[in-house]
Each structure stands twice: as C-alpha cells, then as structure tokens.
Length: 334
Ligand code: SAM
Ligand code: SF4
Image 1 (cartoon, rainbow, N blue to C red):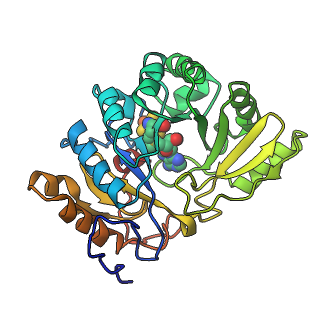
Image 2: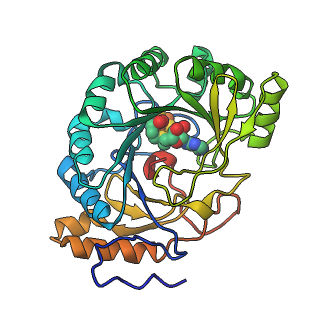
C-alpha cells in the first residue's frame, strides 16, 4: 500500500490513511501506569515507560491533529485520572480550536472528587469501566483496585451532568458473563449506556462471543432491536453496535467476531508520544522526539501522514504469529 499523496499543506484536512479512511478521532494515552492492574490488561511484568509527555506537549500534538481534521479526542491509559495534572490536561485540550468532543475512559476510582472538576474543565463524555457488581469477583479481576471507590465514582459521574456516559464491561467466561443482565439494569438505572466488549488477547481469560450475549439477554424476556450503524466518517462513530431494549440502549464491541476495522476513523498516540496507527500494529512515529528536536507543526504533520500511509487494513488479533507487537493494553492505551 502506498501513502496518500502529501498535500501541498500537510496540515490541511483530510487526514487519510493508506486505505483512504478519514481519521477524525484521536485516542491519547496520557499514562501507561494504573492503580488497578486488571488481569486482562496489565501483566505483572509491565514496568511502564518513563518518558511521559507533559500537558503542553499533549496540547501541541492535539493542536496539530486538530488542524489536520481530528474532531474528537479520548484520554485513556493506563488510568488517566492518576495523573496529578489531569485537570490541566483536560482544560488545555478542551480549548484547542476544532476539538468538539473531549472524552475520558477511566476505571472511575478517582471520580468521586474529579467528576465535577473534569466536566467544568470541558470533558464532555466519560466511559467508565466496570466488569462486575460483586466485590469478590472484582478482587479476582483486579488485585489492587478499590471497588467501593469505583462504585462511588460511578455515582458521582452519573450526578455530574456529562453529555454522555457509557459503562465498559469486558466479558470473561466463567468470571462475569452471568452478570450481563444485571449490569444492563445497573447502568440503565443511572442513565448510563452499558457496552459489552469481547476480551482481546492481551492477558488472561476466555472471551464470550457477542452473539451468545445477545441470546442470553433475549432469554431474559427483553426485546432487542438493532440500531442502524452511524456513518463511519462521523467523529462520534466507533466500533460499538447498539441495540435498543427496555430501559435504554445496549452496546457491543466485538473485535473478535465482527471485525470493525473497515470503518476505522481513529489514530492512537501513546503516553511517550509514539504514534500507532492501529491497536494491533507497531509504533510508527516518535512524535515526542520530533517535538523535543524542534520540529515545526508541518514537520509533525508530515510524520503523521507518513505513519498513516502504513496503517494496516485491520488488526489481526485472531491470527497466530501475525508479526505485530502486542504491547499490553495499558502500554498502548485501550
Ligand atoms: N484505565 C482505564 C479504564 O480501565 O477504563 C482506561 C484504560 S483501559 C486499557 C481502556 C479500556 O480497555 C477499558 O474499558 C478496559 O476494560 C478495556 N480493556 C483492557 N484490556 C482489554 C482486553 N484484553 N480486551 C478488551 N478490552 C480491554
Ligand atoms: Fe488499569 Fe484500565 Fe487496564 Fe484495568 S483496564 S488495568 S483499570 S488500565
């Protein structure tokens, strides 16, 4: 595959990848460290990288991407809310011209105190991760996490007035799969949209296919009506497919059984500034080094365009020995 021809102004939109897909969504990992260490995400051996970007460097990167057509930014990690400067990062990024949506994916453990300040800083959407309603099961999944704090954090987020709240549940056979109907009710009771994610092969556990979960939900007497998929070019479109049911919507993210790569509109930057064009791919552009070396915005934009010229058609999680380096999820930014 060849890269799209560089525009005369490399900063001018659209930002296209090698397949001609238009990138509108940036996932920015702001730390590769975490206070939870979930079994499917964080191997015991993961030590993390040392050289994290500061708030001004994230702002510079987001400004360049915004000029190239990125409209939506999600902060992720590791756990983004363990950064002491999280409010400053949120304030700076929300104010970047062109950025319409600033979202965070979090384990919710620090939201009791941070939900309102983050909304006031300009964060519009939160994805909250919760795999179980049982403190005992939670301890099997996350040896270090604080279950009570995360439950208080979810309630604080629900009360804080965000535009959109979603609950991410990674489903593991024999661990939390029986809780799917209860998690749907829990989320809907708080005005949150639950989403069930097929476990990707970064750590321990056995995935449960989406089709099986839909059957199980239907068996509880719920009517489920599939919603039409959003236009892939929209900055709000993502890999989730949604069904409408009693009480609200339910989403499913199915990286294993329904490859979602065709509509990919996203690019990832890791907490050390490495650009990765695909979750299942390799690092392609060291943006941090370029910034520290004095690169201009146009030079950063050229590096981004070159990296996207290498963006694969899709991830290859289900193939053995596919040649891509799979860092732990917390190393890439989930
Ligand atoms: N710490 C934050 C959190 O847990 O929400 C943000 C980072 S975490 C890597 C982002 C999302 O990736 C979470 O919703 C998490 O459940 C999901 N995730 C982590 N490992 C996964 C895996 N192996 N398969 C599927 N989803 C995974
Ligand atoms: Fe931490 Fe999130 Fe990974 Fe759990 S899923 S170990 S909370 S980064």
